[in-house]
Length: 376
Ligand code: SF4
Image (cartoon, rainbow, N blue to C red; front, side, top):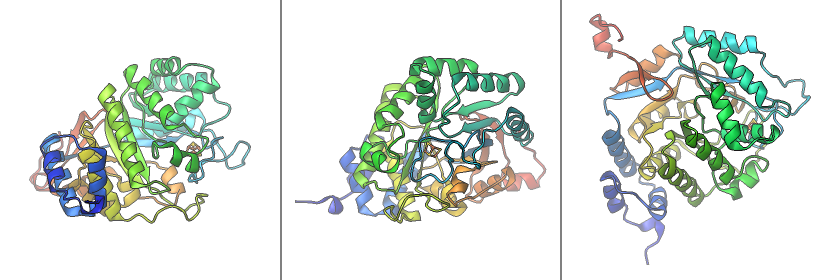
């Protein structure tokens, strides 16, 4: 009898390359194979078939964490502060406005607005902030991960639909996929027992898609999850995408220890090879997701560039400001010229996009730039 580790993965990869859907067991066999080169080649072939192979996109936005107060105390999180902690904050409007103005000055198109689960901010606080931002600035609001939306709904005594309709009317454009970690309740009960369950996270996304809001999907692996649980996470995302088509992109990263995270030694020592394998299998399994983002912020620029050979067509955000990953002790940063250079170094054209993947600005290849052409 064959075992998962001696499965011949060639037929699986051939079928995935042809656009056929792979099963959970097949995804597990790919992960177990450790054949990074073969799996990566197949993921790259799928990426080339689905996205322009000669260009790589990125977005210029700013991650503003409007508050670090949080009552959910996930034990992997080094960012939050409990209510009344002297290091806790809620950013005043004028500070958020200044950050938006700086973002627009840098050619940014979006504000990624996320925070802790504040025990005192009801929906009217968010409606007031969002509508004020929209009345002042031409900026896309990619805001509030599903666990924040659920927290606001519960605290404001509203249904999910009422909450999302009101937030959308106030200017909330799309949802980041934060807080998914691994969508398996056994894992969530260990690493974030007070946070949304898997079903709740998916329910918020389903409702957001239903009211017309696009979203991205995420995965943070490497705490206490097993390979089978990682595949279960992917299956739940693929199933919801079949149902709604509301996810624009997928991004995965490994758990970042350090910086005051209270997770003990039970997390896994994941490597760059693990990241590239997880990414490539995700590209093959999530056949209904259009875009895959490189997580260079967590993996470093070199691995972030390499991710472009393992299924990614996008470098995500230049991260004008990033507090959560930095709080965990990992912080890689770029500005637009360095992002363009990093993409061009892989032999592809750099294209700035907006949050909905529409082209904002094409950058000429280095050779064209020397001959005097300018960005369109
Ligand atoms: S991950 Fe989010 S919900 Fe969990 S403690 Fe940190 S800020 Fe709060």
